[in-house]
Image 1 (cartoon, rainbow over the protein chains, first blue to last red):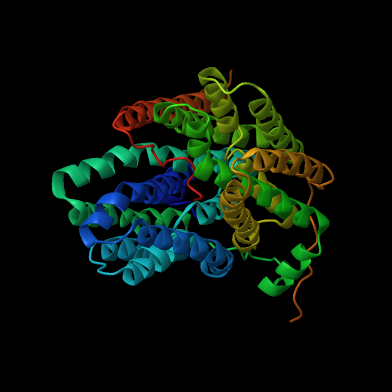
Image 2 (cartoon, chains in turn orange, yellow):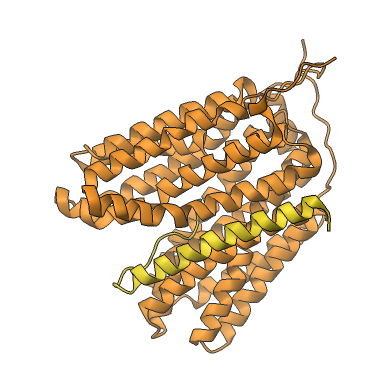
Length: 402
Length: 43
């Protein structure tokens, strides 16, 4: 008879712990924007110093994610989450005493980037894939994604409150203290990819098999488009709206509405992904984005059109995450889910980098964003098409030679 | 409606309620001139 499961390994505890990790890790990170201006002024830096640290952080996160995932697959998600949480804590705490832009790039950039790669939702989702029953897995993945998004709303006032009450440096130390919760919360998410009785498949073999699997390649290409869209809008939408003569207040409403509807979309897509073909849902999401972009571009830009666009695009925002990660689990099982979803996520981050950069380049060259919107529409259609032939069933992973 | 559906619905409503409060806070803060940077946890 199998041993009784301890209370902290019950599915509800696992899901709650994973969602709390998402809330804390994304929440703390979202407060960095609050420090940009005052910390730069305090140290006598220009804004580029902070921008460089955040750029390095994103780069390290993206590049580190497949490795963090592979380590989690091999040695257990709990250990990687705990280590990531400690690195994240150290990075945020050391930001408080960083005396130069280079030091800030090392602490807020490299250390926090490594911490986010190891300690945040990609590893949580991989752990859910292993530890949550298959019929609740998609819902749990959607919940973790939505919880992370909600964490931004929770931590923005908390971070501002810390700054107002205690000053910049103490606020950073207090925020780093909250990240210390991650190693504690990681305990229920322990467990690695190897299951008793399974033939061993090395990381290299799994990666090779995935790279040669057309459905995985198509999924990776689709997630590139997701990153492209999101980074472009995140970076350039406020400027686009003010260029159109709209107020900063409306830009704030727009971003907030995207954030709110993102929570709804991510959570709902997790539920829908457990009941309907994920590839069709993904195809519909990208097609919906394309339609939203097209209507927004062609219709007169008014307060109403901006708010409707924001709500629509928010619904279609991170709703791709539970579906994409779920498809990786369906195709290749859970043994290498951390590494294989990490590679897909890296594609997302590359798309994000290009989307943000190209938006600025096209604006500089043409004086507007019209060409970028058209490119976004074209990529939406392409992404909608590439998801259709994806085979939503298990692919073979050849066992490694003994 | 099954118990599971009710739980899913209640959790979803709780997420929306908390996020809605966050929206109101952000927009109130933005009245001071700053645009909140809270869009996407991936960037």
